[in-house]
Image 1 (spheres, rainbow, N blue to C red):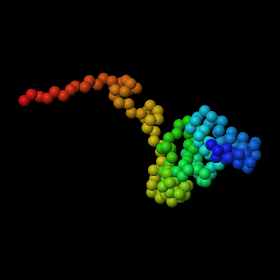
Image 2: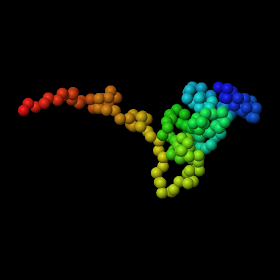
Image 3: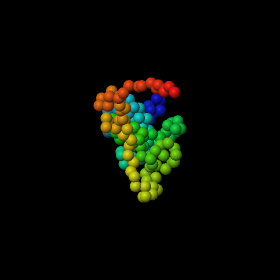
Image 4: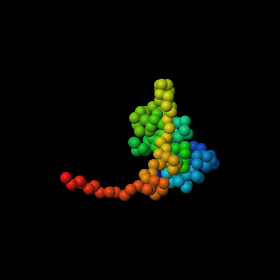
Length: 157
């Protein structure tokens, strides 16, 4: 918590109090008060360096120095209300998980053009049209007419 306060004081000294408050509003800290995960990310962003933004609008940050190794790279998702890890494209996934030190923008320049498939997020579990309900599930009432379990009876020889 001390590093957050130090980072906030440093930002106030650099930008001035009015600009600091304006930046807090513009970055969405007021809306983050309602979402604990988003607020934690926003607090963590203080003093961090914006490394890049992908084509979906996700922002990638890095904070070197007093941050524990393995926790100094993270993503702030563009969709604040609905986010999951499949929204990170593969080129940025490698940077986030320390597979490479090249950012996603650098890797896009190196990507061969023969890989024509674009990244899509995994929509399983999102909305009723993507969720599979087994035939006995309460949310699948149309297929509840299956036969009950019949125990196996060996034939007598």
